[in-house]
Length: 380
Ligand SMILES: Nc1nc2c(ncn2[C@@H]2O[C@H](COP(=O)(O)OP(=O)(O)OP(=O)(O)O)[C@@H](O)[C@H]2O)c(=O)[nH]1
Image (spheres, rainbow, N blue to C red):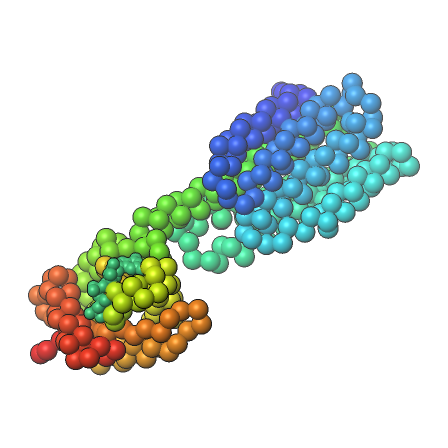
């Protein structure tokens, strides 16, 4: 059976490995990574202090080791809070770490009790683990591509909390039987090995979450127009293909709006390219507010956009188009006044997406010829 000393040293090395891995992810600039790295560094120091507890002065082996380990857990929590853009609550956590260190010192100098020290340390860890679980739980409800990293971290935090509660119960029930962290008793070895794995296990969850964010960012960069955030032309055509197949299979309607900013060239010429860019950003932001979140808004060309409306017939599509036209024509602060012309087409049996686009484009052309700032639909 390995000794507690060996377990602490292996755990310290594992924290070093986690630290080196987190160093790689640091360049992503994602919030929280620095704190997770610091937490692993602190845990590594604490494990070394615990490992050599018999050789070191008691102040280092007890108060400093427990204080540093508590700080590691608290900093881990700060990392999760920063990752999810929540206030880090550093002052509160620093106060809690200080209180834990004072309590550990009390159970050393005033009333020397290994049970007492173990119980306060474990209760502190329960609090931190529950706070991590609660922080991650709020984020689980957000729609994501993969929920696994968040579920994993949530469950792992609860397992850590459960493990520490069990340790509290064992210490309460076996008062006096265990006298040191380095004692080779089965319970002690179990809690040492499981407890030292807590921080690395939570770090794995953190790294999976970082990876998930990096994937989401890459996906966004690949599928979204850089200026406006609308679907890029390529991605829009890809989702349109999927929606077309779905509409055919379910015999549901599918409509397409094509809209184009009127006299956009003259906006650029009069006010400059930056003012033109603001019009495009504003057009997308306001159009997003008009359409449903099941609709797709894509930037098809320079100042031309398309909106795909699943399960929408001509009458409803025309109503959406009119709402869109009217809402974009309202002057907005910081953006020059502009209007859009809109062409509307409805998917017909046997249509390809190119044919649907062609008919919407013809309707848009009619709207332009008819005087602009208007909606036209395809001819029957
Ligand atoms: N600011 C800005 N301008 C762009 C961008 N992409 C394309 N353009 C400009 O958009 C203008 C499009 O002009 P036209 O196609 O002549 O259309 P228009 O002036 O809107 O005229 P109508 O559509 O007939 O009302 C061109 O001058 C392009 O250079 C962009 O990302 N930002």
